[in-house]
Length: 47
Image 1 (cartoon, one colour):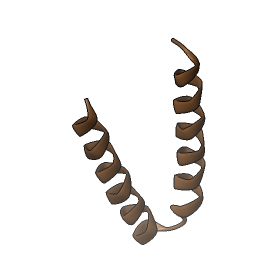
Image 2: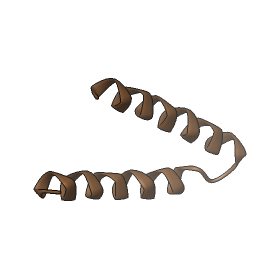
Image 3: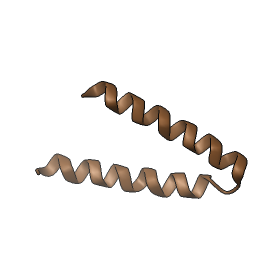
């Protein structure tokens, strides 16, 4: 693990905070999950 690990962990923390802040009700939570699933798919494509 190197310095890039800290950058990624920091970005994940900010993403997590934003996701929980945005998911205030069922409708918004559903949208947040859609966004997170797209992000996961994009990251998997980078591998």
